[in-house]
Amino acid sequence: MTSLTTPKRKAALAAVAAGSLMLLAACGGDTQPAAGAATDAGSGSGSKNIVFSPLGLQIPAMQDLAKGVQGYGQSKGFSVTVQDPALDPQKQATDLQSVVESGKAGGAWVIAVAPNALSALVKTAQEKKVALLLNGTPEDYGLSGMQAGITFDRIDYLAQGQAAGEELGNCINEKLDGTAQVLFEESSPGTAGKAEYEGAVKDALAKTAPDAEIVATTTVSERAKAQTDVGSALQGHPDIQAVFGQNDEGTLGALGAFAAAGKDLTCATETGGNDEVLQAVKDGKIYAVVALQFAEDMMQSFDTLTAMMADPTKDGQQLTVPQKVIKAGA
Image 1: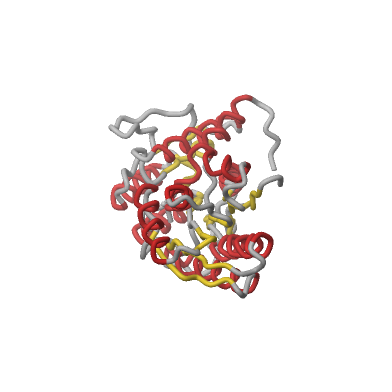
Image 2 (image 1 turned 60 degrees about the horizontal axis):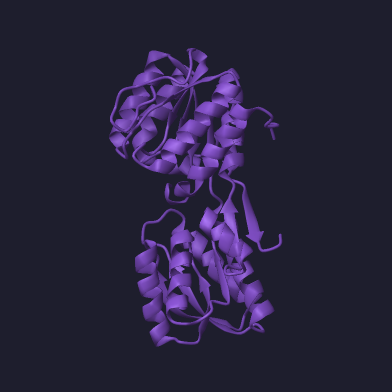
């Protein structure tokens, strides 16, 4: 990993870390503020100019990530131009197509709003020898196998779910003698990686703590609704002592519901890791968090993209977002 020794690089990573958790829900230039006009992060064109297209700059986390990419790019001698698709897949495709066809960029980093809307862009970029970094896998874009000049970056939902399920089982074995009634907060239908991820959580929990039983399921939402839903589940199953909280909002909502019911939540795990959750881990209120390391991923993604720009005729790679299990005292 590149050594981060300059204030600019440290600031870039801080910005990325601040906005990283929004990417969990995101399956997806001239810097455009949400209102519109473009500005640049530096000078340069061709092979030293990169376009970054996030989901939309109305999402604060996307703004933070864009600033991080710009700062890191400048520290490496590249000009980074940020486009604002505003969560519109057609706008994203059109804006990217325009800059790729113009020859003003040597590479583009895209968090696709809808991967299937970018098939024409992929073809044009390969024809123009413009390197691409895309979220997901080749199959998400209707492609088979690795492609010349294109690297893909994915979340390993299987590994993420397995780690979260194992840690919940470890907590039940450690604190509840291996037996517990469990509340499972699931994601909404259509959430990226839902079946693979939640299936892995359940499989790992069953293997690690076979006497634990999922007795109630809720659909995770924002914190207030999560707290209400968990509170209702507790009325029907007052002996629940363990919760798979899915994400930060779900887990914090569960903690609020248990507190309102005058109960202690003995075991809780999730995949997220905002500051409030990390403090709850330190305080022993949450047993473990499986946190995606987006600052590290930003560096590996940017460095891989710039390396591809030197020879966009070579096949790209399949990257995976690094993850880390965070527990109290670890």
